[in-house]
Length: 380
Image (cartoon, rainbow, N blue to C red; front, top):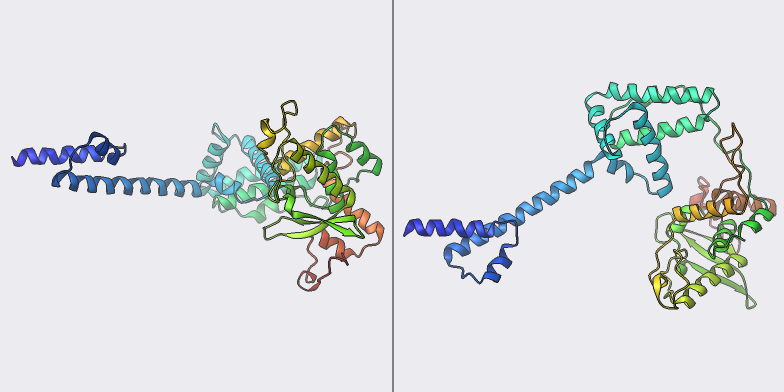
């Protein structure tokens, strides 16, 4: 009798310790729980939950300690993240790092670099010296080499690889700290906004009249923009940039920019989208051939800063404002997006605005004045 009870006990334990849900199995099969089965059920159920929590904690721990994950999450800006990943990928390719994916290459480099820091230093120096030779041949600039070094250094810091960076950065060409480029002319901007996309005019007018960074599109919602009227006429609009973030600040856009944004939002609402203060200012396009209120117009998807960047580049090429580079040149006359920020500062300086007010509207640091200078909205 005791043997039968013991076998019954282990039978119940095996039932509830299965990887499937034991509680649902017992209820669905309607097995009555005698004292032995009930005791084994409780023990097995507790053990399963503890094992699941342990596995989950180990997965989270491995996820947090993965060098590539730490490296990617060390950068907030999507464009910065993309550029840093590209540079590190070129470094891994140059040294012939084994691995099918970029994550595997990063993991292999981190593991070997921790064991042998001199090996990691040698690989980095070999790559940097190769890039310095390209500078001597006028293939790249000295600033490009420094950007490679910064990207690799960030990865090594996230992977806890002890590299003496003074040995790496010593002798790297300083390079120009500013780009030798221009800004688009008024005629070029007029031609740019003729690109057949309803969003392009609002994007160009907003960026050129506010001086905002392209990354601010990731945070810009319709409730962050409010018109400013005088004598019943809109003269400008106040715009909150990086709303809800630590870097939040306000700037202004022109009446033309406000009208372009309002027309864009009105068109979306007339097409069937529900517009409110939390609506993203820039979104994806939808199929206009379907009836109003149907299709993807009712399911808006935010157009992030990377999407805005690609849209601007397509418009510049399509409008004939950018041509293929001549042999030996590495840079176009002006940048696709950042040139509008430079256009804003240049126009403000020419108009005679106070330099400190311009820096405030562009969210630039003004040193100790950040703590003391408090201009009003009317003064700005």
